[in-house]
Length: 119
Image 1: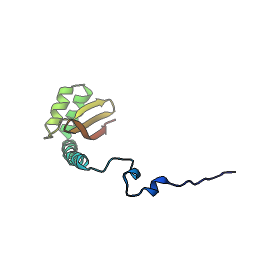
Image 2: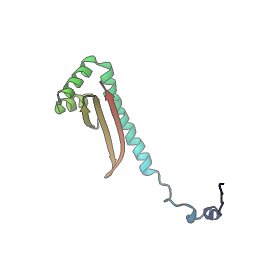
Image 3: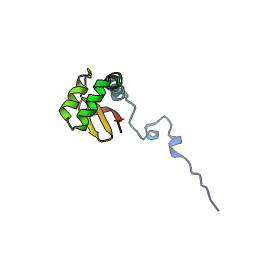
Image 4: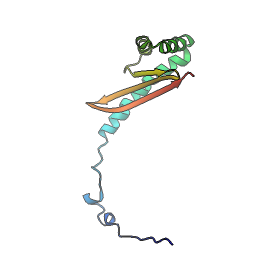
């Protein structure tokens, strides 16, 4: 047998007062800034993806450099695509990960992470 009990929701009695809202007042300034910066990061990620998809030689050379653990060459090639923010680049035998990060003041505000497999 199951019993269900209802109790008076005290927050409903306080609608329109500060007691009803357990969170701070909404201030979307940082949220909008984060979205704006994320758009720029997406443009950078798109530049890299476009270069990889449009150039067989670029994609072959990038993959070869990563498989040889030539971090400087991988970074140079990614930077050569015209990106504005340098991503953190890691790779393993399965593929490559690029983590594009931006800041609003001293706070990390957004990340765009791309993971591409080659195996």
